[in-house]
Length: 355
Image 1: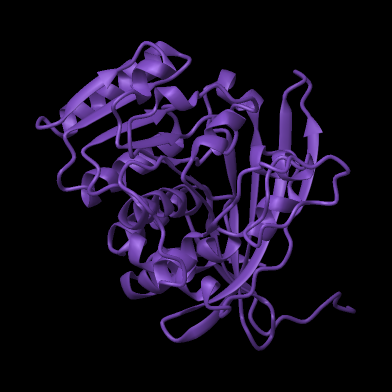
Image 2: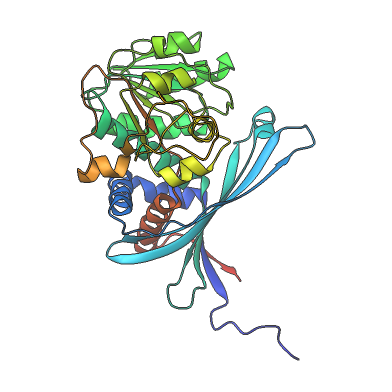
């Protein structure tokens, strides 16, 4: 019989979510992500354009599929991979996570898929790691009071690293548009750390006032956070990208991104929209090709990686409001996924599936 194809190796290793969690517990996630950010700022990574497919569900809710390829060095080897992460806003009402997908790593010689793993946990943890790194390099001293807006998967990932990394943490305030969700997470956090003051806030303003570190991890597409709500010297880790109003960008003493090309080319998110409208300038002071230009438009000052490697000084004054707007880079998923794969091989985790 004529075979359609010949595979010298017909099995592919697969790591489940449980495998990924086990491996992440044995990894210094922040160190892996920081090294990838450092490589990117030094021009040592490969970050191609992303592809995005958008549609509406039967309920009329927004859904999308992202394909995010990249290459970065981990343990002295250049690793190649792609994350496919899909999400639907309709999932929240169904009681399931908004996003799910897979991370695939490639053999550098054959280009064949070398390993497949669940990617939602990797994605959540690398996102939380970027926030922790932002707090380390851009915060006004160690964060003692943290505000989390949104109490879903990303909030839990952040709390995992917050409790591990912020040793002087005193209080956490939580807000969610579903009060029961905030109350449940608050109780879990109280049970996990009796030394913390944990409050389920009644409004976004109540949540962020007085916080050193503000982390929006929501699904909103329109801003609601006002500049006068933030404490003097606060750092906003603008994870969900659309929570602050344009006035917050204008009020910030420092605006930081992870990759300006990604941010500026996506006109669906706040900074990309402002840039496209001529209401924001890029790191070199440049405007978009918009016919309308605000001559007093605020500036995107630098990238987080450039602050890490010292090519930009970062925060200029303790009292400055700092906005860090990480769009999300595939190289961070590839870096963390590669570290997970190495740990899985050492632990003998995973299962083989037929190609």
